[in-house]
Length: 425
Image 1 (cartoon, rainbow, N blue to C red):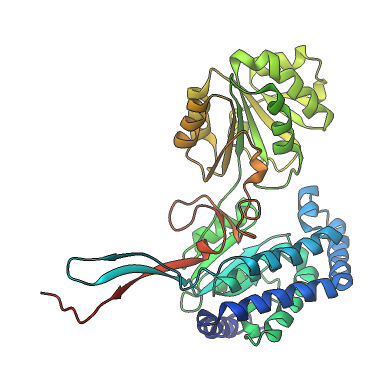
Image 2 (cartoon, one colour):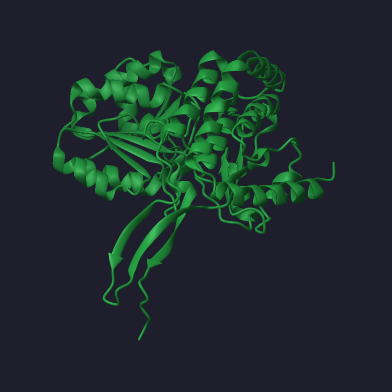
């Protein structure tokens, strides 16, 4: 395959399709999404067979457990994809929305209209459900999409792509509105991120190495986050009934996600009360605790097995493990907690457990991350949980989009003016 020619053709087709999508009705886009969901359910057996083939090859290649977890679809995963498409169809269409209209002294009315970005290139690893989510969000927001999944999910992605094309065709929309690359050649990524004439924005989803490469080499804007070092801070005004369940869920529900807690901070005045119980729970779940000297001493006194404990290094405070490992540190109180988070966090998601309203509001204001939570698990930092239907990714950037990027994050705004014959003096 001539990769350059292939990517140029794909880019031209995406650009042409984006112009048609920009003017497509909400009814047509929703019909396509509904038809995609139906196709996914109808082809459930094909999707699971394709995913099983990917999983077999991934295990043979020795992929890490976290990647295997991300790659696995299962019956629930297939249904979740279909349901996600229907949920996005039910969301309000952001395209064409007019806001902030104000009359100026000259007589003109000035406002803003929400419009698609154009063509969105999405590069991701392992998770085949991203193919459906990305296709749906781009379509509903009036954008054409060029999707490049990881080689480990090639069969799953192509099976999902067939369902997407079927949905587009059923609604009378161009099948080139969503294109899933059929090659795993890395050179295709190099072309995709350097085609500003065809691509308006790149969204990378994957490991830190992939995202660093995309950010370094791209010639089009990038919406990204590099990693997810998320914190849970247990304040000395925490409700005892909330402490262990929140830590347990934030850390152990899934290890391979970017909103999983990787660091635990505990206020020193309540460490003796809460940390032994937290430690026993984490040890029972097979989690290794890399702890500061004082927390390590408390955990040892609580009888935590030595193979579940280790002394934390400086690197541990900024690490994204994506594994059953958590960094643990005692802090004097909320001042030190906020300072520690703002120093070591990746800016993704942080949570405080407290019943003190003043401290909760300080935490919300002063912690500089894309999502900040009070008395809730960091695992809620997700487009679906936030009511976005799904997400294209998480952004820790501060310009254009921050946090889970849904429909609104895939649009821009242009200024519009209503006049009645006014002329400028």
